[in-house]
Image 1: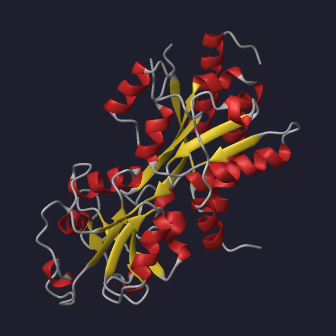
Image 2: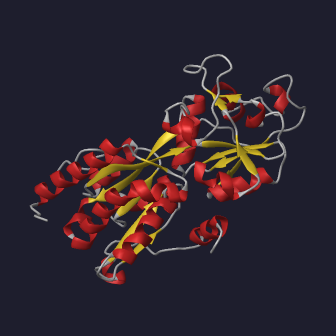
Image 3: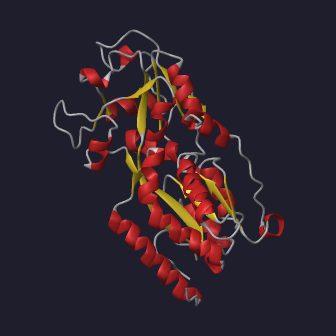
Length: 330
């Protein structure tokens, strides 16, 4: 059975991310026959990819033996299609697994456990030239207004359709595509239902492409991970969550608000799902332990926020239980 939480049976960041987006790895069942026994295949979330990639590079530098860790970023949904077939070892994810994905893993006898490794602030991108939403001028957008813009069959076309005092200018709407965990999380947060989205927005498989779309249009809006805010001429809009924030109270995606738990409901956990077969290999166990031990220091390097300390300690406990079940003594 598959389990989410408990085991059952000198280069700019923009150039670096662009380079990562072009790295492709062939992931096939029995991939150790192709790549060698000391290869780890990771795939999934485009958002989480830079975090796992950076941890992997650090591990490869520190590890005594030769090891290759290949990391892809086709999106959480696309990654799960491979992971639940047993074709990859690690699934990066910006959301929980769906019931269908859990069933697929069970059908293919793929046993895995989910571990939280960080946090991200899902950001609302606006163009740097946008004055009416500039957070430095105490401007903000509400969660319900975001829902009005993005929801299926939305009647919003111009900014003035959202608020009368906003410009009579067409909204250029951007976001991630439906294979993305970012898409699922954002649409559920702002509309109350994952996948509830208008059909005429500019959907992209890469977050960087969303940023580029927003920076090219003064009246654009988009969404994606906090780490990509510095990749273009964009800002993160301040957000007011009517159910929790007092009148006039709003928070931009900034470390103070995120770490204090005020940037809601757009602060989200980041996960890796690990196929239990990886724990059968010493280098696999070593890499996962290394991930848990070092992610709190590495996460800020790629503009993420570490998971709470007690969560990282719990990750080790869950891994201990898995190894006990497998009869492995480290």
